[in-house]
Length: 376
Ligand code: 3PG
Ligand code: MG
Image (cartoon, rainbow, N blue to C red; front, top):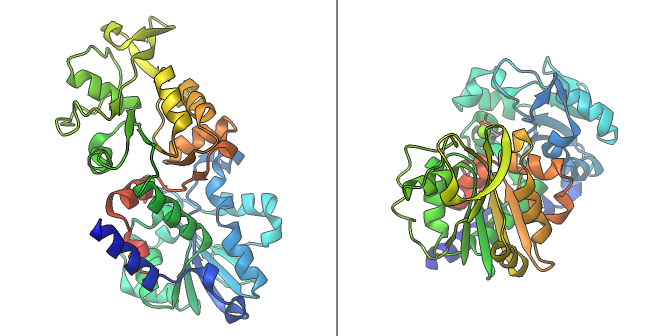
């Protein structure tokens, strides 16, 4: 794989990891740290099960604090009108040791300051150079620890990195290292792709099908696949625009034989050929063959929930997690997938939970992201 080798060489030569720096270099300096605190709110509050992205940046913030740096945290949340106040409240209550002070007016009024939602400035999303200079003017160095937004060419991700000496934070580094492993999986390997839209996932399945030993489909992707064989999928969710001819019939694809359906308000298990007009497929049955594949796998990479988890259909998720082998290196990503795993209190059973949704898929597709290239 000459491309991959060259890619790795390029990365190792030019990437500055914060973990490899001498902490004393940062003493007394102002360090701008881009984080991704874009977390969903419930009744205006960050819930513990959604706070995973916030906790993920603690190692970088602690490293810089211990180094005696002054930290300026930049993040977006939701849309331009939304405020980071709920995140600031969460930090104060749950991570008081970081001493984060919220500064909605942009004043640098503490040793660890969180500024307001960068997307309030229209220059953020347009990667406006004036806004990037304004941000860069706040500090001496830039650290990107926001893997989940590093697929966006925004001012606080890309523009600023061209204006200051820049580093990849601890979270970004572990995302890169784990996802590079996902691109070169140790065999036997299993890729699980689920969720609803084939648009971004089909090119990725096409790319990874030659690299993985097994690919398991679930969720709306599976329904779409079943329908392409003329099977009745009732009223189940599908991606009607998908053309699956490039993957159809691959011997590596493992398709569940049984699914869980809702039929007239009742939950039943049926084979995929027994689904009727008014049924809704709500989850898949993880059968013995799949359990064996998962148990003996050295690498499992998983993106997208297999069941309709919002309605409580999480059995497939539980079955996958509990059947991972002791030797399995498991990498899971996609916001919803991680949410389900955390709600089931199963995060300890996964080797690496990616904070990225779209960013994880794009990294696997392209082997890098614009925000990462900007650091090189
Ligand atoms: C995400 O949650 O996917 C990232 O924070 C990026 O957010 P965006 O999709 O609104 O750009
Ligand atoms: Mg998104």
